[in-house]
Every structure is written in structure tokens, then in C-alpha cells.
Image (cartoon, rainbow, N blue to C red; front, side, top):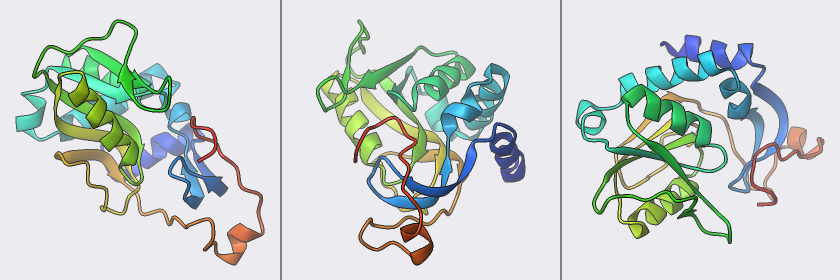
Length: 194
């Protein structure tokens, strides 16, 4: 898929939003990609996951044993990417503030894991999820996401493959441009109050 085709998937799902948004990182942005909307159509989610699987470096794609994603945003794309790769998919969640495997999910010691997110902005959630995978005995060999909105600055500590990179400006809450200061802020993501 080309970048235009990928963006058209977001537009068709009304998932490319404009306004004043509070991101999970606490940063503010005039645009927001609501991946839950683009993934709510199973056919579209499958199509995007297959395109992402094709972009993975062969050495990562061929070595993956398990796909792990952080809840909530990464669950659907993680499941679909696991299906595209023919590998089991599970997720980590934050029952008490930090990520952990639950629900009977287990990793074999040293299992080669692909960590999958919906959107990466700073990479913090990914690094926290990678630490949880390590604590559970797995070994993250690569990261993937539908969207990299970090401007290429996110460092996950492993090879990182996004389906698309978008340069969307982000701002500290104390350094907003006038047009964002004039609008109420909305937090559309899954993590309350950053």
C-alpha cells in the first residue's frame, strides 16, 4: 500500500480528526488519528495488518514467534498482525499502572516477540511494554505500528517498522500555539488524564 492509500483508509473511516487533542503522552496536537475507528472494520484491519507485515524486515518477520501489543490501542492491530504472520497474539495491560501479561498469557523463555502498537508518538508506552515482555521471559526483536507520529525520533531500542510515518506537530501544554489555546482540549485516546 502507498502512503496515500493508507491515509485514504483513515479518511474513509473518519479516523483522521482535526481539533485540539491531548495525546497519551500528555503532548497536544491539532490532528489525531483514531485507530480504533480505522480498525473497527475487520476487512480494513486485515488489509492494513497484511500491509504492515509485508513491510517488516525479513529477519524480523521470519524470526517472530509471538506478537504482543499494549492494551487498549494495540489489541486489534496486534491480533490482526499475528493473524497475518500466522503467529499467536497476546497483549499486556496496566491493571495497577504498569504493563504486565495477564489472562493466562505466557511467553516461553526467550520467545522472539514482535511488539505492535497502533500509534507511536514518543515511544514511552512501547518501551514500557517491551520491559513487561522482558519481565515475562520474552525477548522483543522488533517493534511495529500502524502510525509513527514521532517525526522519526522514537527509539524503542529494537528495529521499528511503521506502516506510515506522519509528521504531525505536537506541543507541550505550556507552549501551545494561539489557535490551539483558543480551542477546548479533547482526550480521545484510551488512557485517562496524562
